[in-house]
Length: 87
Image (cartoon, rainbow, N blue to C red; front, side, top):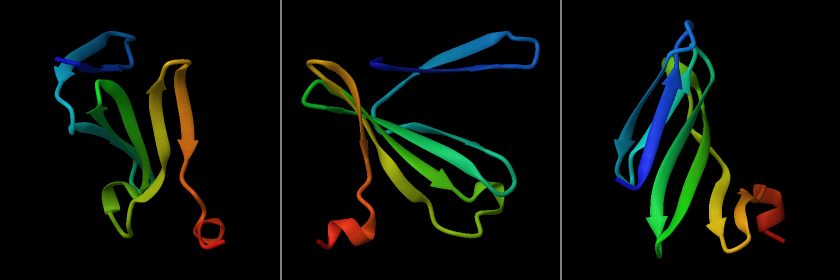
């Protein structure tokens, strides 16, 4: 499997598992969270990052940006602000 996810518990034990492209993680509290979805684009890793409304799910996820694998290493590409994208 190309992607791997892991988490650490309060005793600092780490657990992990392989995952496929298109799968992701959602770490959240009651009112806020973050979701990351992985994918393989032309044999390069990409991770889309979203802000979520947590377990209450009282709103919509907001796309924050993407981490892309480039020849120069990983690069952060933030989402364009709606006002900026209209210019």
